[in-house]
Image 1 (tube, rainbow, N blue to C red):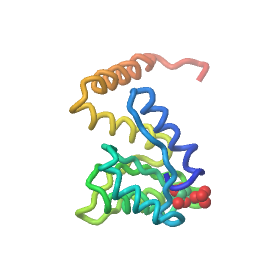
Image 2: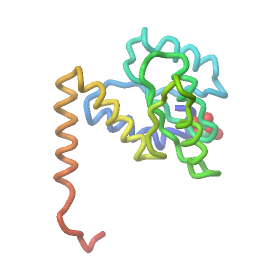
Image 3: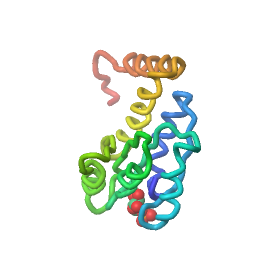
Image 4: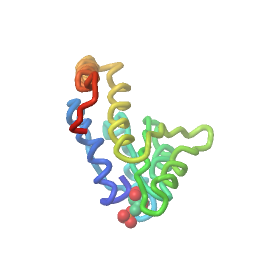
Length: 154
Ligand code: RP5
């Protein structure tokens, strides 16, 4: 993520990965404030054993796109909700990549953070039976938790 302030959103991604038993690291890498850290991370991520990068950032959110420019790994982008423009700036910054350098862009905020983890799990599940099973269980629990009728408790 681009800043400590993104953690309130991105922790939902980390928690979902934890729930699925998927190993991960959370790092702060700012495209603007720590550009050298970004280059070092993105260029070495594959050789360090990372398989997928989930990049959450807000505002002029260059982190996912710049990361994708420097690694062959799949990069998923989470637009963090910004104070000024409610995350529309983040979304458009991340989703409008030029042809040739893709970033798989999720929804703004918590939903995007959770879905980035689930999307990564779905990719990894193709070659990992344990993750595939846990992802199916997650989806099954989610289905079971939807009541057939509304409760007056809200
Ligand atoms: C972006 O700027 C970060 O991803 C964050 O969403 C936003 C604001 O950062 P802070 O000023 O809160 O550190 O680079």
